[in-house]
Length: 126
View 1 (tube, rainbow, N blue to C red):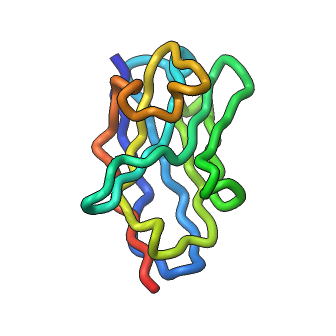
View 2 (view 1 turned 120 degrees about the vertical axis):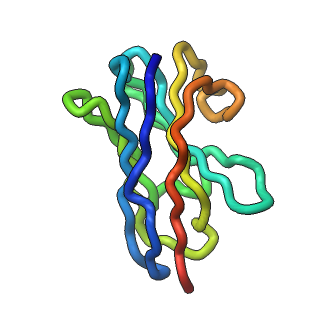
C-alpha cells in the first residue's frame, strides 16, 4: 500500500509561486496514476492536475492550464505541483491522491482515487 505525504504549502502573496511535493512510501508510484486535488472551505474537492507514470500523460483542470505544472521524479518516488501567478481563489487545502488503473476520464474524478495524503494548506493573500 502506498502512503502519501504532501508538503510545501504556506502563505504567499497574490502573484507569487509555490511548489508542492507529494512523497510516496510503501510502493513505487510507477504502478499508479497520481493527481492533485484541492478543496476550499464549503466547496467540493476540485481536480487540479494528474500524471500517469507508465505513459506520457498529464492532465490539467482547464481553468489552471498555463499556471500550474505537474511533474514526477521516479528516483524520489515523488510528484510535484508548481503553482505560479497565484491568486486568492487558489486558497485551499491541496491533496495528493493515487490509484491504480484509471481511464483518462476517471483521472479527473476524486471518487476514483483510493489513496490520499493528509493535505497541505495553501493560502494566497490579496
